[in-house]
Image (cartoon, rainbow over all chains, first blue to last red; front, side):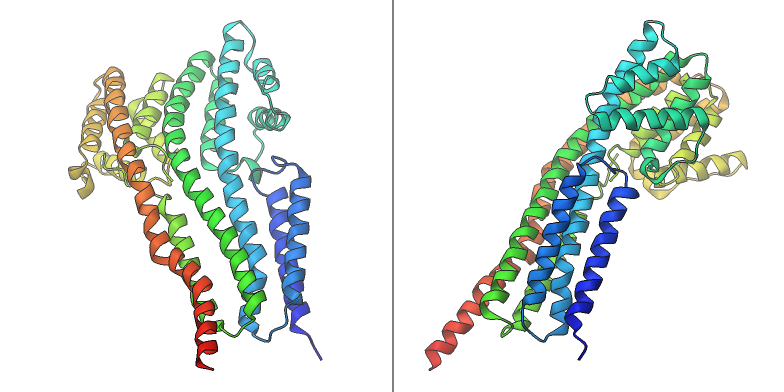
Length: 251
Length: 144
């Protein structure tokens, strides 16, 4: 007799693995977190799925929903980490730009100043990241996915112009002025958004724990209630995550 | 999310390009090309296109948003050949103040807005999950 349990187990593990692979290889923060964090995360998911597969009940739909929990967590974690990565990137870029301008002011050429400024950054990951940006500027390579997001594209275009221009320092100072004003706004919005994202993540963790506990305790006698509660919670989560997405500028 | 108000972003980018030696027209074109995802940039692109063909384009929301109207006026003057760099620099300061004030107001509202889905959906979901099975169990025990 074919057991649906193994099919779900296989599908969930496959999608989870694919998501994590995407995070590591295609997303914009490949080595930002140590690989060991992802390994621990993956093992936790395996344990969770294994635990779910051990529960004895026959409701196919709910089982499918339960198997989706690791996926929901992975997606939320991913969006949360991308957000934090971007915040860090902008901060590092400000440090970098200041160092680059200082180097050029003391008479270093653009390219060697770029290398020195990149090497002066505190994180090795960002040092390598900026050195890769230099390669893109010098050899006009196509942007790989980790460099392919809108503000960075603009930054690369401006840096290319600065490299090719005789008024390199003025170009960079203008860019710094623009980045500085953007960072004032980003920090203000970022703090408020981080609060909302942490709130949703904590709620998701609490709810998942409670959901598993209720299933463990009562089984599926109250499946309609479980289903209604799940729908309500997911709706709330979606609306909450949409809350801070758009600022309606009145100016 | 647009971290920065579209007119302020436009002023910053156009100003930077003019400082780097571009003409007003090419600065506007470069800004609209590089920020094509922003609705304001698309409107600006259309405005420039209609202006070049001798027609007028004025979206309805520009009438309500005073700063956008002023920016368009400045750019129009720049396209006619007037020097606008100093005007843009002064206007940038004004816009920065207005945008910060606008942002502060929205950030103040955000915690209250985020409470709406929490109280309407998530708290009932928690209570439903916690109390409903407990009450139903209790009811079934009492009925025996």
